Amino acid sequence: MIPRILQWLFPCFLSPKQDNVCIHIPCILHWLSRLVLAGIFIYTGYIKIGWLNTLQFAAVLQGYKLFPDNYLWDIAKYYPWLEIALGLLLLVGFKWKIRYVAGAATALLLSFIIILSITYARGIPANCGCFSFNDRISPATIARDSLILIPAIYLLIAGPLLGRRKKIEIPRSEI
Image (cartoon, rainbow, N blue to C red; front, side, top):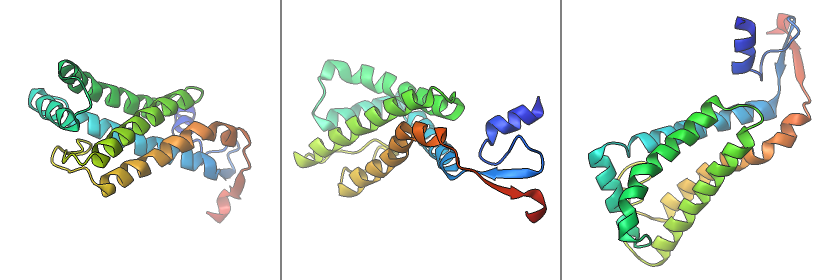
């Protein structure tokens, strides 16, 4: 039971053979991308939960001047839970479902980058609301969110890469 759990947690390093350690670079990138995205989504969702934080997030959304006022509270209340759910699904994710979750994460990040870009292009001095409520939208915040998109896109296209595994096996005696 424990070897199976360890193999599930660290599939990039454990080989079914006991005398070799398997290193598979796309698999390592896959796991790192999942952990980074999961951490970001869980953290950004967590900081928006709570009555006062939801109120601040609703004020940030109102600053974008893109959403109807009667939907602001609902978006501010449920969007953080969507972020946390995506983060948990990425963290726990099942091998064959990661591409779907990565697709949802990519769509969410792309829509948010588009919203930030539109707000910035219109010259509206609004806060981003990503990692804090007092971070003004600037080219730097748009670039930061675009960098977060890279692991999501990698997870979206990594399925075929993980199917063609070329492993480097290192004898345990050389480690």
